[in-house]
Length: 469
Ligand SMILES: Cc1cc2nc3c(=O)[nH]c(=O)nc-3n(C[C@H](O)[C@H](O)[C@H](O)COP(=O)(O)OP(=O)(O)OC[C@H]3O[C@@H](n4cnc5c(N)ncnc54)[C@H](O)[C@@H]3O)c2cc1C
Image (cartoon, rainbow, N blue to C red; front, side, top):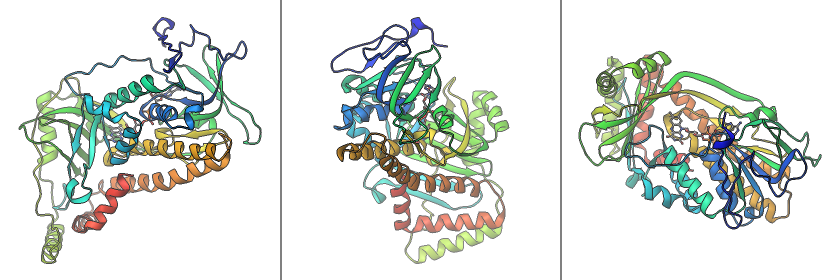
């Protein structure tokens, strides 16, 4: 529970968003004893995706006329850049970089720190099959950027508070519930009820409140979800040797994928997807044993099928004969020599898909609408794609004189995002399942599939272009 005294009161009336204390300051737009403020848009959830939407609402010409409230449950934390890296990082794609550039957020990230990913190598522990992605070969641009979650959130908030005028922010917001309009014709507002009895109303409510979204629950939409029975073990790793560390490595083990994401020339960030029992063990090991277990995961030879090896080497020779990449130019992953103290943690992993992203006067974005396994580094990028499309369709609707809650633009938003998000989610889920089995025919099929994908540049380009949009 956030204490009243901890709630920040920060108010600059011209040219800055107001950070409002629920309990201390009355809004000028107060309607009656209970309704504290009426807004055009309320964004519930100020994580990376919700804050980005708030920023976009202030930066896009037509949207900046709207009066917006951002409600975030956690307190407003002061950001201090530490020498040690945070254990929570995201791989951001080119599309996200463009969005952040358009909002003037990217230069703040660059000023703090990020690491470009110029190569990516993904390989199978059960065969010789592997695939590489190379920035110069495929995109003439970096494959991705590794950024700590709190660095990105700070950069977004910095821009939001420095140059957005139409957004009020309540940190430590204790939302008790929502009253949503029954139909788009009713002309009713959404009502957000706070635990202290205050209420806020708005025409358009955006649920950016993460995987356990209360907005989604209030919409009463169907949510298809399953747990992976896997935890994502994260840690900040020290590498045994200093080198130009711009490669992301991912090895598919029978027990789940293990990935190293570059942070600088001596450090990488770990995301290791494994069973809850193994994850618990990994968290309890001494640093030395943890590092040994991780090096084993990256280097150990797993039992192989002679039949699979014979077939993959035959495919390799055919590809070589045809002048195509045969996968022989395999790079060796780095050895790990340490894990930063206190950086090991584990997070549950799950799939989630909200069958509807919109309802009358309501829309979902980010993890509130969709959740994926982190093996493809897509989760938050999909959420930023939602922000881009939502602001675009809303801007077009306002430009053509449509109402802010008009069902036509909400439907366009839902269709365009589900067309992109659902196939991506399913592809990630299929990949996860394909690599979690050790049946010989399956290992053979996926190995040859990976070899062929690696050999044909247009296919790789297609994969990359989907992953970066
Ligand atoms: C181990 C791991 C690795 C990952 N790696 C990557 C990666 O490399 N690339 C990638 O793209 N994605 C990655 N992801 C996924 C990514 O972290 C999520 O997709 C992203 O955090 C979702 O952002 P969000 O803002 O939608 O939701 P959240 O980050 O969950 O934010 C929701 C916000 O809403 C607030 N909130 C919730 N309920 C309420 C309420 N009732 N009232 C007020 N506020 C509320 C919360 O306090 C929070 O701030 C990874 C995830 C995991 C677990």
